[in-house]
Length: 300
Image (cartoon, rainbow, N blue to C red; front, side, top):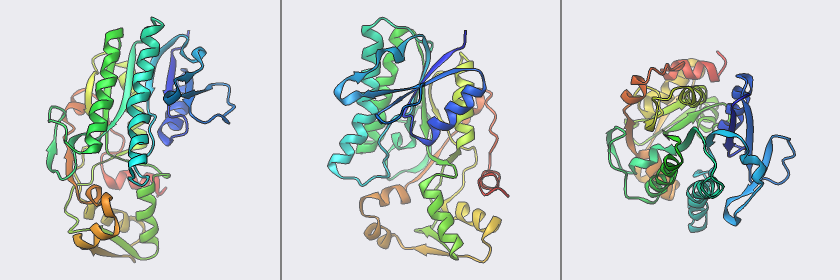
């Protein structure tokens, strides 16, 4: 019998790529989506806020990959922050309550989290044992992981992925960088020396599959490239690969704070992620460097 994998966040780029890959690997993949108009036979509607779900979606599930979440790229209004929190934390809580109430067991619960766990205004490399930040995004990540950990009470192995920027052809921030370079201007935020942690979407998907197959993997992991590049080095690498005619322009910090209002903390945060724990699992990255990752994405 095929392993049945339940993936939340059906409309996200990671969920779509993961689902396709796992189906090719012979898994029985089903999705939970908050979109009622999705008529695919393996997609089930749910509304965690209203406690709605088709219970048939839970039958024979062995592994859950929880990727649902209202994007933090949306405007940081009070209403949107609440949606960001509920779509992650409350949805995870709802899933646990369903499995607990119906006495259902699973082998693995894998949840997305984010490098935002460590907080804004950082200036160092973080390991998985470092304390969380104290800002609103760090609180989301902390509570998100806390809810995920409850699945261990059901006998599940819990894996928490602290993910930075995901590099993919559909990634918003990457497309903006490429668009600027194509018009001859590469934008550098501040002095450009702040760290720019990232992970190629294929490596993220491969880690999820790798962690399902390896029972020794549990707890929190920084899911990032082992390369520790700066914002300047990242943009410069892309320029050198395809847009050599472009010039790099540094935007002063004071102007960034005006132009990007509250979100400037993401652009100037000097946070790097230590990946020793990930490396020690035996996981092998396909894309260890910006050059390799961008050659793949730009199809060079």
